[in-house]
Amino acid sequence: MREWTVIADFGLDTGPRTLRYPDIVVDRKGGRGGDFTATAPALLVEVLSPTTATYDLGDKAAEYLRLPNLSAYLVFAQDDAKAWVRIRGEAGFPPAPEVVEGLDQTVRIPALNITLPLADVYANLETT
Figure 1: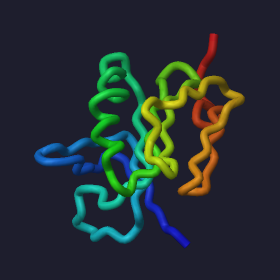
Figure 2 (figure 1 turned 90 degrees about the vertical axis):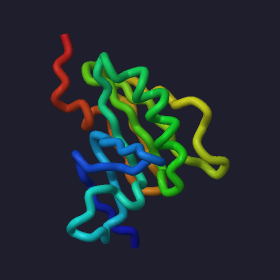
Figure 3 (figure 1 turned 45 degrees about the vertical axis):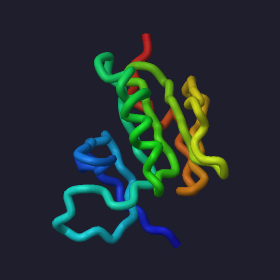
Figure 4 (figure 1 turned 30 degrees about the vertical axis):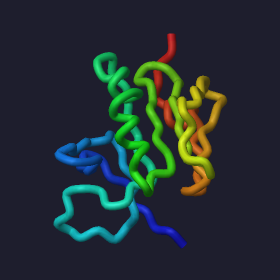
């Protein structure tokens, strides 16, 4: 059985002299108490802001998708029930994210055996 830990505000080493801070990291349990970076992230989540959208879906995504243990990279819109989803398959990650939109949609991450209903992710979203 796999054991995971969910962490926020935690560093992620993505390459030479590059340290990122995803909004949410799901990492393998078992790191040392003094660790300041994730060791084997399986899921990374970012929440878009207007100033980071291009970066989160572009350069940062390219860095994350090279991580050997990563199974999924999710980017969520702030003000709309919309997610950009990349799930690693047998051939690796798809070249472009799948866009999932609407409160009736779900995101399934097989490697973690979880399904995220967008209605739950956006439970406090106020719509006009």
